[in-house]
Image (cartoon, rainbow, N blue to C red; front, side, top):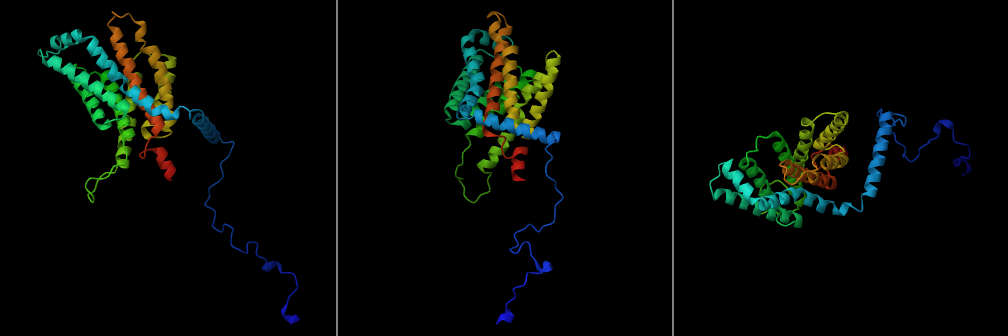
Length: 310
């Protein structure tokens, strides 16, 4: 019996440091740990710290961002409707004398614009029939461009592209899962549609800032703002750090709007006052679209989402 029991120490060549096979036996892939002294790694760490702090301190405001964004997007339409009503005689005179609208057609044109803008804006604020409201306001943008003869004005064109981008953001925000009417037929899901509308909205929103870069007098401050703003626009368009790039554009456009479009400092009889007022409220609408982007994120067709996948 004793000959079957070995009480000697195990031999060195028979010792197994991982008897249960728990160690990682795969060969090294060649990747090295991040160097904490690398400037790029330091920049990434600082960026992540800023993002975390912004996320923490913006939590109380976050539930209200959709409502704020929606209101700001339609505020230019509300102001336009009020301006048409309060300047009815001047509007009729301009359409008939300069745009050669027949009597009656000019009245109908203004009435349709006012009714569509008021009803569409109210529906968007109340989140009711958003699809029809967005379609109505889009038609107002196009009809006014042709009606007032501004469709080929570069500043008007770029600004209205951005307003359309804001309306696309509203449409994306309103999309919810709905049942397919015709089961079995190939259709685009609501998620896919939302991705495409978010992409279109992101790209169109940045055109206002491009107009800001192309127009006006240049200065040292304007050069720096234009460089950083253009970089933020590209990041919004491709969806890289889109939330924080959009937040930066919200800040820049808000400051620019107050100082450049200060219509309240111009005399009420001065013709420039209406132009500044129009630009001021249009910029507010685009800021509203960027606020919705901050709230919703860039969507599936973006670098940020692809980074989550890979």
